[in-house]
Length: 138
Image (cartoon, rainbow, N blue to C red; front, top):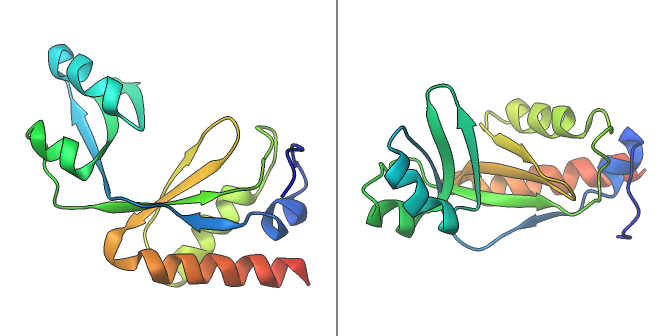
């Protein structure tokens, strides 16, 4: 893995190096500005939507704040430095997981894409993505 930004779909897939991170996360939403301000410093990410503020919190922090924690997720980081203008990486990843009946939530950040999958499926999802990377490297 290099720190060069990658735009080519094949190069993004062959260099994605999926890595399963520690911890469980929960996607939460609140329309209460006070709760959002309290949760935001601990959030892995947050996004303002018409319906409220969506937050990605550690499962433990979400529970402390009273959020529903019924769907714990694990995070897989795609270590490739994908360009914001790159086409096809998230579509290929989501399609591969869908082919194995695994739901995912994709979050694109500046340097990396992050794949959130149900905690119980995390190891299977990682295996599927490693196989996709290997197939793209040939």
